[in-house]
Image (cartoon, rainbow, N blue to C red; front, side, top):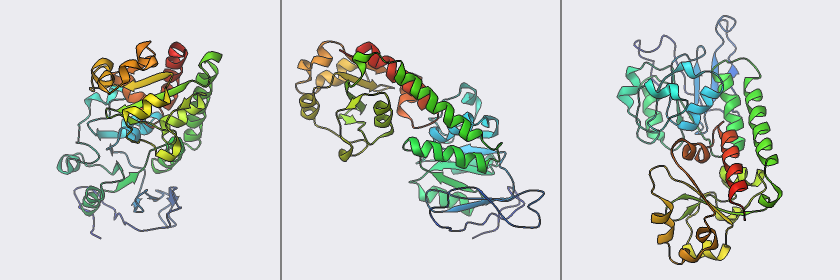
Length: 310
């Protein structure tokens, strides 16, 4: 463990392993804690970071984390984001620092962050940042439970008013319930195929998209035992006979050029009868990311099912 560079920090940031179940920001017992409580939090990679005070210069290397910070009202603390963080629009002026798997470490250091939020899965980059004295907090955001948990964790790390995360989660839940209540009876129980990427790769019952579809009363043709995002054979989808196809399409081409090229799909009733929802641009991002915008995703999906259900 190295002492932090005077260029970036005055305090020593210790990386300490703590039990994996401890996921909350905890005040450190010290004589100085009354004036500036220390913050200690464990990431989903099992590594802990310790901060002398609430971070004011934050870099986020995952869109879901970026959107969570902003949903909690702390967007002004972001000084840099990854190339895929596009919401809210005010982020457009911030420096782009690569992606979660290929972060630009040098550019990140020039921003003098006191906290970097990043996805798990790039232990080398996280370790390098920590070696250079920058606390890197690695977090998972894969399903609705993790969205709720990360909101609470960020509330503590950023030292935001108590209850803000709970209020945001209550808003999200209420919006999802409202989207479900808006569906006409004929759209309930509709069989859905969600093509997560060309292949076809599907969003199954075990994915956060599957969770949302279930909350809306839809039936996913891909069972949970196949995993959250399995690759399917075109024949599997044909045999399942989905009522509605949902396709997020940022930069991935149109429905005719993609799905009609799968063997036998030309005869699929849902395609033949136009029961397809194609999402582009920001809407594609919204329904494809586990973040506080799942409330808006639920509305978009509900509108799709109401319009396209047979």
